[in-house]
Length: 253
Image (cartoon, rainbow, N blue to C red):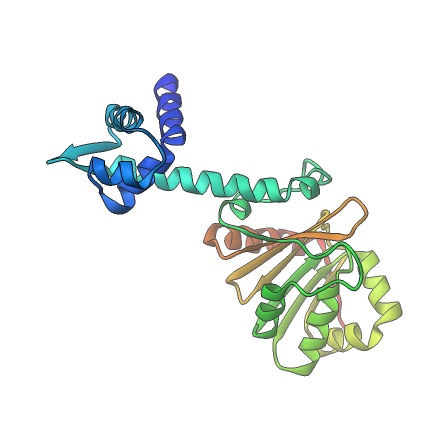
């Protein structure tokens, strides 16, 4: 069984382009020859390999995917997308402890943004826009990132709901340097938790629909941001935040 699975994976990865064209266009062989930079014998061999794995079948000269082939291509596409995201964040991820607990769903359909590594730091436009239009924000961080100040000030300016889970260090910095932003939230009854067991990354959950995972370099510089609307990633963040709250201290006026 394991050998059969490996053979199917090898064929799908090797013949991904041709399988994609068959799934999307259901071409005949001539269309395939015109669409890819491969010789006719290579295309013939590719089709036979896909047929042998029951991923493709030919009917009246037309190449069509089987349902297995359709799912196999989608799995392959998601697999490669996840590894592209992983590759784009590998430098930052390498500094995380093994118990960091980031869910793999974050990497399966995530979009990665890298802010400039020098001052003044430019905005991450999607994050800026999502925060600007948000009604509810839950922010989890052990490091004081610029977005925290933005979230706190935005919460004071409108009726948006703010929930904050921060480390003791971040709370102390805010209390010393920005009491005018943090104290009104505590006094108004917004949920502010300190002593949260936050790892070396931040989470920004916006309107229960959009998750930003903020990852730092080894010098604590905000280095990579992953945006995700994947339901599994969002659900993981909710469960993770719920667990953090159990160990944290809710601040009251």
